[in-house]
Length: 243
Image (cartoon, rainbow, N blue to C red; front, side, top):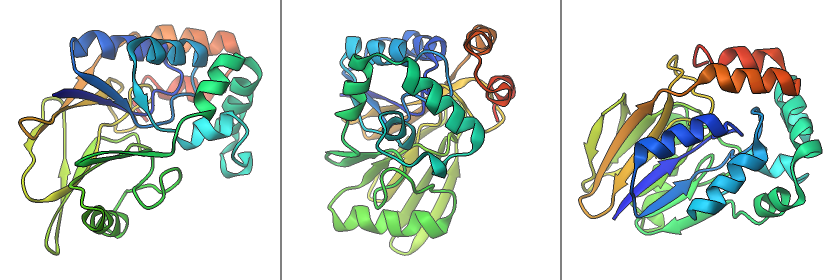
């Protein structure tokens, strides 16, 4: 079974369509939250995910967009984009987002946005966060944690008490073994690792293999749509530099 794992689309339909075209035929598509926020096409992105039958969990921007999170947690630009999204998305989009769970288990994998122990808000950026979350997966009898939130493709791997950080790039392939791992596919709609190309992950459940991919998309088209929508300038500009 081949599964495409996406995260942090952030209402960027141009990027999502480029990724879907590159993926081709797979058995399933899993989305790790932050489907909306920042970008100009929340309805279009949700419609596309519904159309392809994607399995998704909620991210912090998604719960904020439906009014289930305090906007005080967000910086001014992010808050402005969420307020814009709240005003413009359709009731159908709102209802779909509101119904998303914050975590799913697809053995041997856990699907979350932030982390297994705090699905919406925790950023896994160092061993201090990675180690307890890997141990939690072990306690739950799982070996693979799939998460987003940081917008940076990366993998953490644990063997007994030895923790390893694996930085990944386009085409990086890793075989799953007895070690428990946390894998981040990176961001479809707003990469933050200095590479403006969309990032996603292919998970071959039968062969036990992860492969990361990057896809170029028409950044300028998304930027034009954001400017026309009146979204914050920094959110527009950062797309071109991947930050």
